[in-house]
Length: 258
Length: 253
Ligand SMILES: Nc1ncnc2c1ncn2[C@@H]1O[C@H](COP(=O)(O)OP(=O)(O)O)[C@@H](O)[C@H]1O
Ligand SMILES: [Mg+2]
Image 1 (cartoon, rainbow over the protein chains, first blue to last red):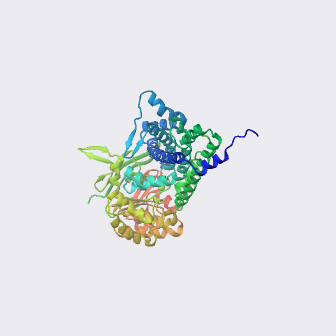
Image 2 (image 1 turned 30 degrees about the vertical axis):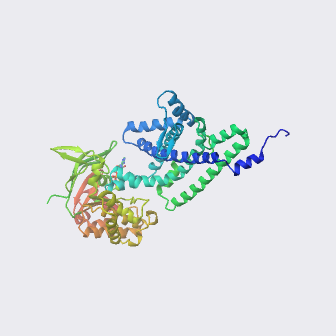
Image 3 (image 1 turned 45 degrees about the vertical axis):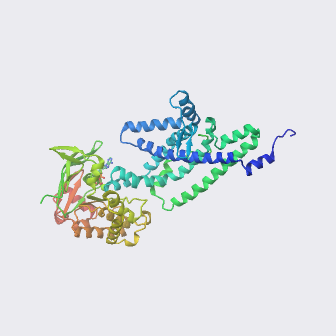
């Protein structure tokens, strides 16, 4: 044990008095996850509607989308979307300036890739949610003279959204963890920042344990928020919510599917 | 006077089973028509075809001035898309066997959602009307209850109020009391009788023979997708001609 190489003061210093770049990395992780999840929800709803369209070719298109984006590992998608696309000269990701914010090329690619990937999973969740809503709800909406769009907006979606909330929390947790892959395209989110600090200090063990602690903190906070929101929405449990539980099994947080 | 509802030579099949075979029926404004017949005879399908929830294979349905599901242009008949058909359904109320109240909305919202989102009625006016309707069906104290908090009979009365809020010219009822506990059947039938007295045109699929005898101007007996007999309540219940009608009524009583 003579060559044990642990710097305990370093560990506590970085844990309790994190440098600004580390805090910035944490913030970046949260905000990228949030934006990508939001876009993934919107995209997922859209793909779900394709998947359930009256037209066979739209349904097939939806199926194809889900097959591709769930089948290819996120890391591979990320590299194709950023490095691959730029290398092939398809798109060079110039900076996008929105007011005071500048969205760098890697950030654009990161958000795009995470959103596209997430949309495939959200599509299946929305589809299961909508199909767990009783046919009678659709009939009743049509019978009061609602057009398909009105019925979707005021009857079907509000029910689907409540059903989707528990698996959505689960997806967001996976999304936070998934952002750690972004270091590969040079984004200094939590994991990327830790790697950067490691390159300067070589305190590998201490730093990556700190990264692990940060992820656990984020995931635990997320868990509390999810519990609270679920309790709120289960006050009037919809019949469709029980159907959904039979139909859809959430991705397992412990399985390695990112 | 031309009839309010005119059904001509309606055919409908699911796969290779013919569910409706040459149904023709006329209903005048203010008439109450009860449809009776054994289970599986096509009563629900007929009711659903009238407002085009199910599409018939051939035949014509006219309600008021609308040819349901189609448009007549220069003598040619063209099918309407779902959005256009939904406009025609505004005039036709429907009450389902299983109520089908919108489960995420309370009683009041169930009633106001149609007028506000379909007709564009302003919120305050629609709430006032909804409260009046809830009062009419005896549920003014249940405004803010959700469907899961109401008994079957209460849910069905809200469903009737929801349909009435659209100010329909015709009301369709598909076995409105069949899914109810016996003790709540009466309250729903009472609301329907009140509607009939008020002059509403109604098509009611029912197994409540006593009720049919009391309110029906016309009773339609269906079997195997066909109308086997039409007559006044008095005629059908005491002097039915058709052996199938007789057999059915004997079984029901
Ligand atoms: N969506 C459907 N798909 C296939 N068959 C159906 C469908 N709806 C009804 N049927 C069939 O049509 C026949 C008539 O049904 P229905 O109109 O519900 O009769 P009723 O209301 O008189 O009991 C039944 O044989 C039933 O099985
Ligand atoms: Mg039926």
